Length: 247
Image (cartoon, rainbow, N blue to C red; front, top):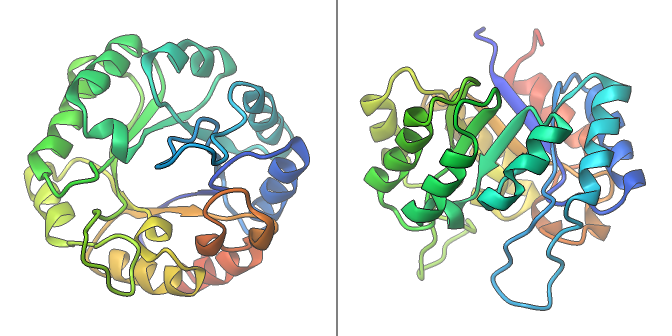
């Protein structure tokens, strides 16, 4: 079986203890890349919007202790230097940021020529050309790390069982345009509920996507953001053993 790209960790870094406990659980399940959001663009004010730069120290400690690559969302060009100084291995561009070409270009310029992996989530709206264009902006900036995309579904007024509509034809269109580009799936944001995450993950791999970008928390019921859709490290480990029995 082809080795897939797997990135997992909490929606948000909340405390040093939470980060390290979650990282320990995921490392025990064989996960080698750890994600956590530090700046959280929330839909409405008054919600937890992230611990900010303080969390970079916790991520760096998780890397030192557990040997994991670390990933966080890069929400604007001002924070690019902070991520680079902290040695963050993977920066992802969120769906709201990917919607605005001006923001994407500013971040691409801030990372120009740098050695960091960049993964671009699809824009909130189902605009495949906008998604591809965001990827191309980082490509033209000469990023010296790996460049990829993350399918996290699309917002829709009409809701079904999923939080975001998958519209699998769009990542498949992107694959057709750029067969060289790794495309991961974020089943957590598509599903919106932990019980549906394994189902969406299997769908993504069945249509040929290259890996998973999953939210996992040591205690999902107490999570400060996206509590309903996060798996425990043990639950995620069960999913990994299902999709990669020889992992």
